[in-house]
Length: 437
Image (cartoon, rainbow, N blue to C red; front, side, top):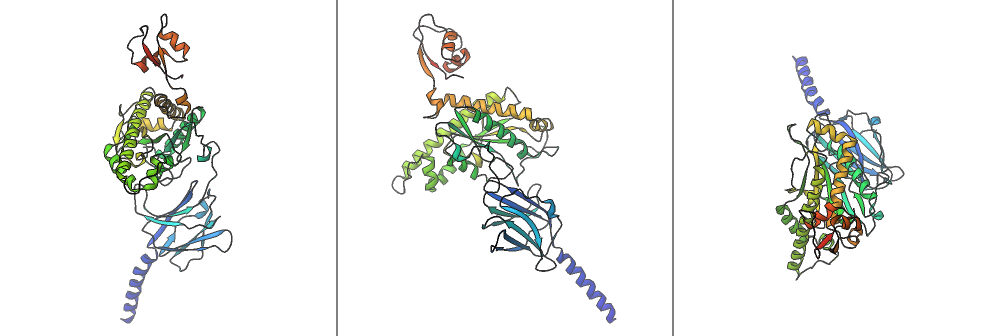
C-alpha cells in the first residue's frame, strides 16, 4: 500500500512539474534594424515572464534577458544580424534549468525599451526589445534631412507598414510592405530627378515607423506635401482598383484640438510663429483652423490631379478623393494624401503590384499628378513659383498655337488653364499662360 501511494504521488509531481517547466516557448527570434533603432522580436507561445540587466564594463556591451519557465525552440545561428547596433544574439548559462538566458551584444551603451504584445493578425505573443541608435548605413541614393535644399519643393514619401507590420497579405503570400517600398523609392527617384523638386523617404528600408511619427517626420523637414503609399486589402478577392484618401473633417477637428495643446508642434505648424501662452488662444485657434482648411483643400486638389494620372494606367476603385480618419494624414502643416495603389488581396492586382513595370507606372502617375498640382499651386520661393503662369493680352493675328509655341507650352494646357471650350480667341482677351512643361 505504501508503495502504491509513492507511485501515485510521483505521478502527481510529474504531471504538475513537466507542464510548468515548459509553460512557454520561444518559437522564433527576429531582428529589424532601422536608421534610428533595432527591434529584436521574440515570438512566444504565451505571454513572456522575463527580467533583464546590462553589462557595460567592456566592449561589446551586453543586454542580458532571462525568460522564466521558458525553453528556446529556435536556432539563433539562423539569425544573421544586419544591425550596426545589435552585433550578435546568443544564449548564455541560464539561472535555472527551466529558464532561458539570451544575450544581445551591443556596439554602444544604450537603454533598451521592452514591450509585451498580445496576438494580432498572423503574430502570436511577442516580446519586442527596442534598442535605440543608428543600426544601418544610410543609402547614398536617399536624401537625408541635411541634403534637402531650401528652394526646391519637398515631397515626403511614406511607404506604408514595414518591419514588424507586413500590412495586407495577398493570396500568394505577398506582403503589402514589400510592394509599396519599391513604388515609394521609384517615386522618390523621379522627384529627385526633377530639378524643381526633392523627395524625403519616411522609411527607406524594411523597418517600422509609428503611425503618428510619420507625419511628424514630414513636419520636421518642412515638407510641402505628404504622400503615403499603400496597397489595399479586403476579406474577399473581388475588390480591385486604386483610390486616394484625404483627411476627414471630423478627424481634422479632433487633431486641431490636440495641436492647440502642444505648443511646440503648434509653432511648427504656424511656420515658426510663436504660439500664444495665454491671451491669444483664440488667435491660435483661428490660425490653426485656417492652416488646416488650406491644407485640406490642397490635399483634395493634389489627390484629384493624381487620380487623373492613375486613370490612364490602372483601374480605379474610387474615381474621386475619399475622406477618412487616418493617423498618417493628421499633419496640419502640409497637404496629405494616402494612395491605395490597388488591392493586393485581388490575385490579378497582386501579380501587377509585384511587377517592376507596373510599380514604375504607378510611381510615374503619382509623380506627374504631384507635379501638375505644384504647377497650379506653387509654394512661394520655389522654382515652380518663379515659373508660374504669365498673363497675356491677345493681339491681332495671334492664335493658341502661336502662344503655345512662344511660351513653351501646349494648346491643350492653355485651354484647360482658361476653361476654353474651343480654340477661338479674340483680340484683347486676357489669358493665363501655364508654366512650361
